[in-house]
Image (cartoon, rainbow, N blue to C red; front, side):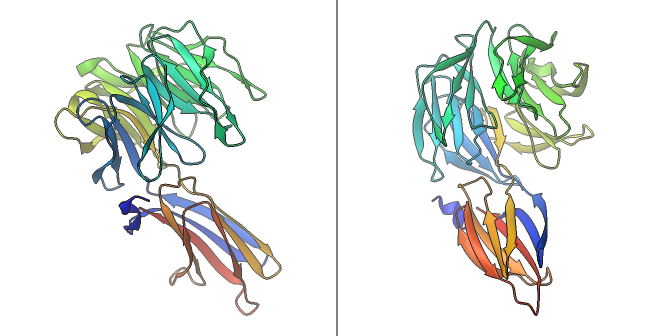
Length: 352
């Protein structure tokens, strides 16, 4: 496990209140951001919620895109080595798939299948997940594209692809769990569309990688376009945090720009000179579930993030917390609820 796991930095908190046979859950979070740097550092940075930057993995060639699956594993597309790498929680790089042609986008669907936009071959490849095992066989999902770059899924399971050269965003629709590989134009007339990201309401945001006049375009479900942010210098990767803030990898400014839901821009972090960020991805927020069986409360922490340890705690007043168990998620803990004090709160603190 990485040495940083020992640091007591709060990443996310989820609280459950057990009252006899009832419980309520609420989640607040402060997330950690992974950034793929493709020019100078050629690795993946890790950035804390307060903007502290550290090297998570180095020694890559040209990392362009990041994706995190439902088990919390990090995958990195590398354009020069024509490969996809899987990064272990200890920061060890393992080759997952090779033989690609300039991979520029990654996205997981809800079933755990991985999709990769292959810029050099104008294809989208699919890597299938069976029983939590992701297979590295190259399977063509879609063809006939023109510079595929960014990928993103919406809540209904439709896949969207930013076509860098044609200026279109294509949609592949999901019917009863089956993704249709036919190209459907969702938006057109864009200038070098790159990164894609959906906010919590289902609106699509597109980075226009148009050098110093770069912008982020907001596209409604009906396809109506409007400018959400402008004046960005070659924006590329996009991702939202749980609070609805948009984070943009701005390549020619060597920085990550944070844009709040109202459109106000602020500089989240500036990297070292000539470190050019490309792909960005937040670690998912944790989930905490539980249920009462007779006088016992079964607590399950399933954050999906094996990169961070977790401490399960209980309290009777939300002021004083008692540690129950520390482990890497997912894990379970069974707590006894006394009849004298049936009110009990539970939470899991995930730290790095």
